[in-house]
Length: 332
Image (cartoon, helix red, strand yellow):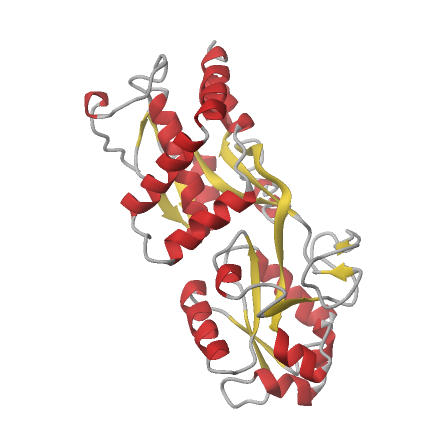
């Protein structure tokens, strides 16, 4: 991992001291594009503090945690917890990587969606309804008479939960977990829905998927019959109320998630200014969702996403300046 950065003279900063001048920061970003906006927000704020920050390296989860534990990367803004607990607890990583701050606290959701028309027509409310071969066939795309669930990319972490659910809810005989490149699969799913076909998919929020397929209008959350997670089977995933869910109470099968910065532990200890910034920054879910919609509409290259981040910073300048001031005060 070699860093190539332009000189600070070529960067334009908004007022304030630049205690990070001359210090290079190496950041990553996840393979899911719904997290790239957050990465750019941090990049621009760190540049305001004077740091030289290279464009984020796009990595899957395992690669990020390996390289960050080794000290080849410093941080990313795409940690999902508790689903990423499995990475920070690995013996080779423990003590070398750690989550810090809460970009989104207990606001990110994951679960299974079904199109509302099919749910209403056939009385489908729960994932285990797909044990019924006649129900499962409604969602068959490849002719094997099994439901095709558009699922989670390998190494994201959510795929482990889905695979566990297929076993614990006895769905292997009637349901297939379709994996590949998520955005491409969802594009195909949206096209199928618009052609009038039933659809079944895993998704999360914030995510542009639920801007295209509106929860409560186009699609509904399916419940699972009981809480069961692969690493923590006793953890309760039931929510008393959930808009757009087909059962009340609603059990999405996944814990409500925190989106957090994850950083190299030595980096945090040696650099208290960015460490403090990581602790403080919060981005509302609705702001992330709004940016994701802009990205989905075609504003999706690096320049676009950086511009979105810059506009968000300017729209929240008073708050951002408070974070930057507090970070500067954390200098040793």
